[in-house]
Length: 610
Image 1: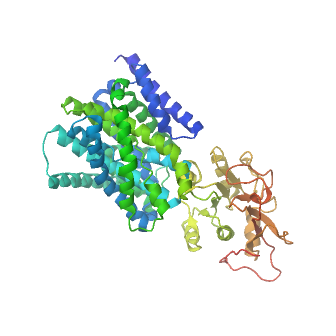
Image 2: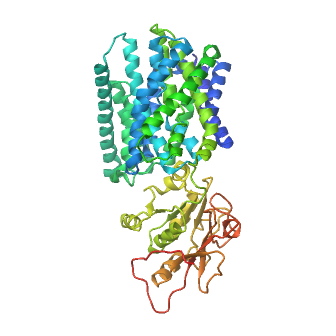
Image 3: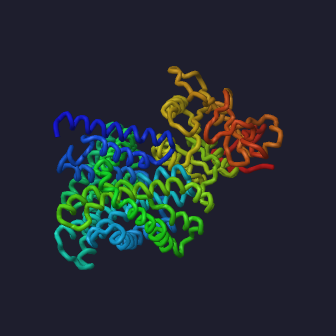
């Protein structure tokens, strides 16, 4: 290809990747539903959007390293401390039972349906065991199932991607070398690959600890260091054995998310933007290699394969994986109706199908188009049906507010307890270690160490945060964070009225008033609480008692509405009507300071009066 064609091809891939994601966000559907047809059309219409021609032999390694970066980012959202009990047991079973059952079921179905050889069917069956966070996450964010279900599916999608990648590499080498391996040898090969990945991940974790914790690199260098470490470690592992870098990447991401030493390590927006771009580029470039001539003969057979996977393989895997656990019938059924295929299936098929075709494996040329159709069909099917299925099964998270309180002062913890007693699942964030310990001691759920991550974007979606309340004693901090979060869609951001006018005049978010009124500043609230003023909850039907100030109203459906100094905001997590809707709600009040008694330093428990 000429330099001009390369420029046009690479530029078009990036533009289509970003444009497809923008369109998907406007339509509120998973991006893959738009990206795959878009890439397919671009490949059919133009001669320049063909990554195998643009990059040549560098294409498969670049795909593998890009997937490693995506899986590292997915690992950053997986905290081992939240994986315990039945959740841990179900995740382990879904990964191993899913891998051991889905591959042979898909292979036995694919051979007669697609008219391919047993070798090609074995390769396709192995490719189709994976799911992936890039497709599961957007669907779950839209459906909002119960937290345990969301955690199980995200863990499964991330872990089975690595297992599937390694299994695919082992099957590929067995076929390409035309050697018959016994079961024992195959198990040893797989364990060896896992060992290399785990060792590489441990080296990567040690490297990140030294660079991020000991050297205390700043935000920009900290982000680029993470990127370089993931790519370097994954490349080293893959150079030793194919696709072992995927395990190393997940290990590194989970370690950064879990180990206390990394609590101050931030995942910056640039890194998330890079991963989003990488996902789009991969889907566009891989789908561009699929032609209509290759799709036409496998279209109906591939739909038959999808039916086997959706109606037989996944329900069986979910039933066996959840047997004897504490999951409800609805939760077990929903797990049986959620297994879309994603980027790892596409990248593995794109990497291996051409080489297997060149090696003379019968039907190998149908692996990529069949995988393409399975991805499109499963994502579309689950994306369109997951929400009504979840509602029918009764596993949708209640549509009540989930506020994030930012601040570690005693009155903030008391407010969190009262909101929890009023039926709201409340998160609390504080920056200092002592404050975070007090949050846990108060029985409240502490938010993640990175405030911007858990208060905006995918992190807030993952935690189901509906509104952010900035309640620290530092007015400058509150104002700065409110500005940083003001472009985040889907949730409101509120802050306390400053005790004194801010020198630089940081504005409140447009449409979001300052909290509680001009006289209830941070220092005033803290002083009044220390003086013995109680935070309590009363039915909205009661009159406001003398000397009490209204802080929040909780509607009958669990909608939280703050009392603001300006116009009341409209958005998710608020209700413009008094009481948050029809019926009787709850008022959260701050009482007057008693005439004699003074509050001890350790706050008491909030209660619902009336």
